[in-house]
Image (cartoon, rainbow, N blue to C red; front, top):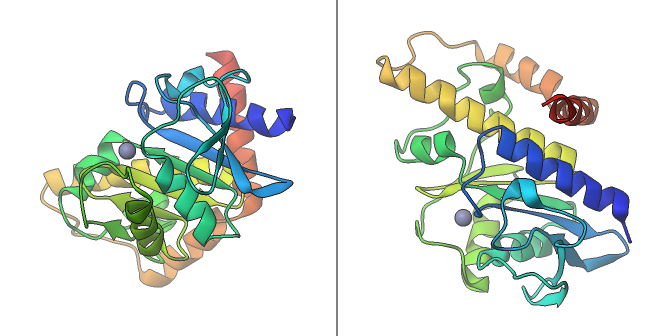
Length: 230
Ligand SMILES: [Zn+2]
């Protein structure tokens, strides 16, 4: 069932891994089940992001308990269950330990729009700092969802990133953009910090250009074509 949706999850895992966001078997993706909004499909534990396949995707309830599937469930399932519970507008959640995002979070500095990707987060980038430990309880998952609020992306300090969106295409776009934005700022900070930044109105205009459903879909389609060439 929902093979097309699961195929998107398989592609998303390979795209994220190819972009350097894999952390061995850590990191996960979830997709809300279209006709059962209190359930979601999720990457299983003990496999890499690029190893997601039709026969290892599991089904989980909003309480974090596995409903279907042979494979194991990630301990950090509560990031997904609690964000999906808190946000009826969200159908896709991505969590990775993207290295530049983790490194940037240790600076304790706000994200700047160094290049295009940073402009996407000009409306604010929440940072969860209550703990740097894993999100292994529903309480911690709820705290993450509260920090995320109505945003589409956030950092977990010294841990990773979370993106949440109506579509998997958008959630992946935000995850890749956030990692690139953090990487650019790390370079600039290493060179002494930004001395030249775009005007706020330019940044807002750029954000508008890049934050469009058409852009999310076209980028995802391009990344799938690129996967096939590699
Ligand atoms: Zn994690």
